Length: 214
Ligand SMILES: NC(=O)c1ccc[n+]([C@@H]2O[C@H](COP(=O)([O-])OP(=O)(O)OC[C@H]3O[C@@H](n4cnc5c(N)ncnc54)[C@H](OP(=O)(O)O)[C@@H]3O)[C@@H](O)[C@H]2O)c1
Image 1: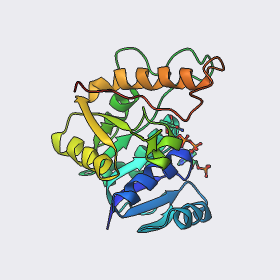
Image 2: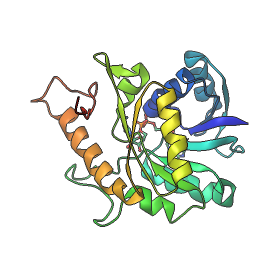
Image 3: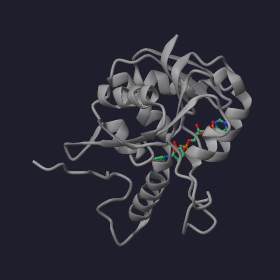
């Protein structure tokens, strides 16, 4: 039994796994197809990580597919009712890469809400507004990272907030799952800023930060 199951071995898998390990959590890391990728990332990160491949039984109570939206949907179809009772964290930024001018989900919904329609798990939107590099580091320029979180199930939201906080991040619960619409737009805006060559001070190593009143 693990605390967290992360699916994928790419940039966000590395960043989120690093924070989970820093928080003392146990992690099940499932590679897409090649278990050697999960083994290599586990060796790099250290800590309590078990490895496997997509299709293995999910042992974590919190499941974080660190994959793009199409793969997220395929994972939900594949695991079906086995995800019942679990917390599913949607980290996707569903950017329409054909135009790079908007999201690939229609107005009036979000990737997170569309995924919720497909699964008995409690979907929570989180981590889409934090970039992978800063997550792996746990900070930017000595500043704590904010993790903006939205979800309908209070316990599920709390579980994700605790995961973030244990990993040294500031968890900010912004509201119900429909707030994922705003989080996905915020994530997209942040991506546009990183990709903007006229703003070389950002370039994927920056973070959105809400500065509270003193
Ligand atoms: N990168 C960021 O800073 C960032 C920030 C916020 C949110 N996000 C979101 O995080 C997600 C992952 O981004 P990333 O940058 O980590 O991508 P990435 O580095 O390209 O990693 C994607 C992972 O998905 C796996 N994968 C591909 N197809 C799959 C499938 N059908 N089933 C299961 N796994 C599959 C890949 O495995 P193989 O390579 O072995 O096929 C790889 O491990 C995306 O939704 C993105 O929008 C990213």
